[in-house]
Image: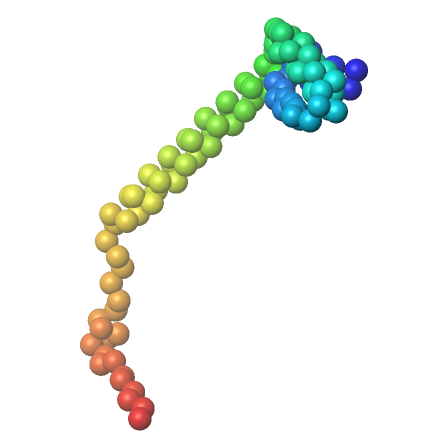
Length: 103
């Protein structure tokens, strides 16, 4: 009953079985292997619910919107990098830069 939702529900389950070579643990190891065999034979028919389908549609729409937004942002960056840089005024270009040397 503990794992009934995991084994028989809409999920995938991974099971590890630990077996001991000790003769005193033989019955415990056998029981563990029998349980693992029963779990292995369980088959599920996973069916998406209406809520799942709606959520998938919403997520696909959001991915499409974000891809479009990313494309537009990259497009703006590319066009802005092709534009010429603004020139500094002539008065600022003709001024020599002051270099200060300190010893």
